[in-house]
Image: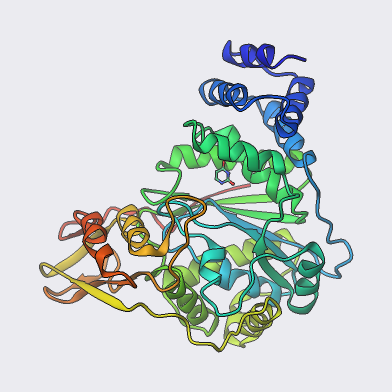
Length: 421
Ligand code: URA
């Protein structure tokens, strides 16, 4: 097999054979195909796409590049959720313990934030003592003790994707739907979950800016799941405004705990319950998750899960040294609060990172005091910016210029846009 023949086949709009796909993914992982050759192949895939059998085979080859986790020793069905990421998307934090409180096991491998979207692990690391890196045996222990575990994927899981994703990041080839879908699904299938619910975000703060692109990504991922015998459902949900009121790390943990205590912003509660119902149905369980929020059992699981990973659920969360409040410039209805603008502002305050190796600030972030549709009065607080470094404030404020609008009619996606199964 020759890398140049494989590149030429895709460059000229052809369909790769299963043998070509298996060879290309394996040879790249072993270092037998050079980065520049795989970059050319990724660009040819971005430009010419892949058929459903090609995507299924590409995903399979990436899964086979590493280990496949096995939870068959647990006495509960496994179910998981993956979100394509957004601003204020802390749903995994209340969702995993909630679904575990309803009888499922949730082995959630999560990531760190890059750019304007936050990462679940960065958020949880604002809890004093909490550890993201667990061995497979430790993951199993936490799952047995709590029913849910949220941790970093080990280096043995889909190493082909790890290498290819880093290459796509620097070659303008992240945006290919077959490559995004196979990247996400290879990790989720290798993780060994029995059922999967995908939350595909749509809007300015998301990867997918339009409903059409989000639907294509969702349909591609659902098809991959089905082709691998994994029960998979996708929801398209709004990311044109931030989710909830808190955007950042510790502030999002605090908001998640409010939800587990039976309160919290209505959009976070609604999406958490909707995803929980989908995850439970996909796992063949029928308990109503609203009851587990009311009776405190989801909170009990949260506390056990955080404690089992070295965290102290009662420790005070870090708070920022500096705050700055943006007030409403006029009275009226807040018609727009742009997710991307708020996400970039939180990132510039220190909540996110520009390069993988950068640290993040646990205390940095933004609190939204009003959401689109709310009536505000001139001078009332709209947003509070939190940072440990006041020199970051001017650049953060710059990204909020034009990110909100008072007056007119809100034109927003409904929270739940569509369901694909
Ligand atoms: N997230 C992933 O894991 N992979 C992609 O390609 C894009 C987003």
